[in-house]
Amino acid sequence: MKLYKIFFLFLLLFFLQTCDIVESDNGHILITPGDDSLIPDSIKALMKEDAACLALRDVHSDPLKKEDLVILPEEVVESYYRGFVHIYNAKSFSTRNLVIEKYKIHVFPYPETHSLIVSVDSTKDWVDAWKNGQRLTGNQQIDNLMEEYDLKLDRYYHWPTYHAAVLSSETAINIYALSKMFEPIDGVIFAEPNGYLGDGNNIEGSIESNYMKYVFSYGWGDCPSGCINRHYWLFQVKFDGTVEFIGGYGDPLP
Image (cartoon, rainbow, N blue to C red; front, top):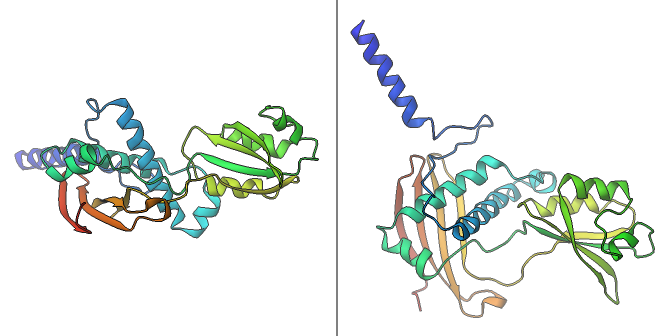
């Protein structure tokens, strides 16, 4: 009987230690959460954007998901965010202080997660609503997308060569897949992400078998055309929240 109780206690302790790690019903692994209570809200907002962009890059690595999956997998976004929290809290690492405090490195915003541009045939009746600053147009296909993804009309452009509307989502989503939904609609000439050009600091990430991988990089030298030089710092965050600095490489820092 005592052995049974000891075995039961062991299983209970094991479950309590790992329950924060495996939480998803969709086969995704969530690492144990970190304490973000002392992180400034402005920094947390940037880290959540970083996490969403890394999740979108994972989506884009699958050709089918890239085309069809508009809503980002919440578990993947959350896992990347938790990893960022653990790195932020690992203040004993001097390299952590470099990438977060000195260089303030975040994910370069590509692919686009918030804004798309829709070129339209300005002679179509439904386009008049956008011309007049009205979000909904009376075109059911357009309005369904505007409502389903809570899109805002940011601006309507009367360019000499064509007319276009800029739409945005407050929530980070797969803008590329969303733009594909606009393209078949009568009156839409083209739709595409309204993203950034150039280059700059970046973070690359991946979810491995038992840890999260984060590669921070600082770029310099003609970055509007593509950074000539770049230095990298590699971190791993185990699913229990342990942070390890693996090493730095690349061009010597200026």
